[in-house]
Amino acid sequence: MADTDIAALNKIAAQMRGKVIEMVAASGAAHLASAMSCLDIVVAAYWRILKLDASTAADPLRDRFILSKGHAASALYAVLAERGFFSKDWLDSFATHGAPLAEQPAPGCAPGVELATGSLGHGLPVGAGHALAAQIQKHDYQVLVCMSDGECNEGTVWEAAMFAAARKLQNLTVVVDYNKWQATGRSNEVMQLSPLREKWAAFGWKAVEVDGHDIAALVDALDRSKQDADKPTAIIAHTVKGKGVSFMEDDNNWHYRVPKAAEVEAAKKELGLL
Image (cartoon, rainbow, N blue to C red; front, side):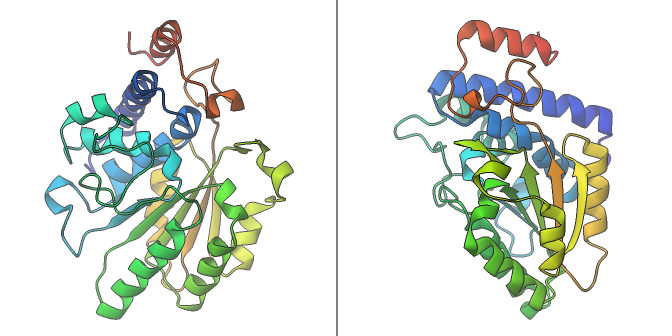
């Protein structure tokens, strides 16, 4: 909804964080903090940027959103349910055996899920393929890929980045959820990602940096990404793992930890949901 104001979007993002915490607590699934770091990006995309809603989920001219960091699927599921792509009741069985919403997205698992992204490094190559198809067929849909910073360790990412620049895929935008953590340590200790904006620029992309929790800044950067006729755009979104809950923020234990009942209640109070 393009007319949803920023204050309302911040409230929606808090509600989505609360829902993700409930989903993870009920299922015992991992990757809670990773989902919370990218939620503002997903909210900005689905409420203010994408030409995509439940009625156009199968439209070949729809905008595409690919959550390449599939381990944060709970964030995408919560947003898709809120936007009416499927029943909110589905969230109650997240990551349970036989349920449609797997811990990491499966092919065709739910309306609005574009791609199975359990293995990192594939979202951008597929997104580039979608963007190229639009270019060849002279369609004007946009492709938005949300990646983790850890994915930037993958060679497939940089191969796709070179390809997208060579083909001038201006309808392709990447948002890197740069929360500075990977599963086993600080991102820049595992691999030397920094300076990340300059790396994307060197690969031929228009590259900008934003506060990944400033929804107004995200919306502005995503809007501007459509205006460059010569290059794809990379938005380096500086984020905080576990954003929104003080005892989870920037604590990599929450990459795998599951909150207990008292922690769920404390988190929801911090989010202004109780």
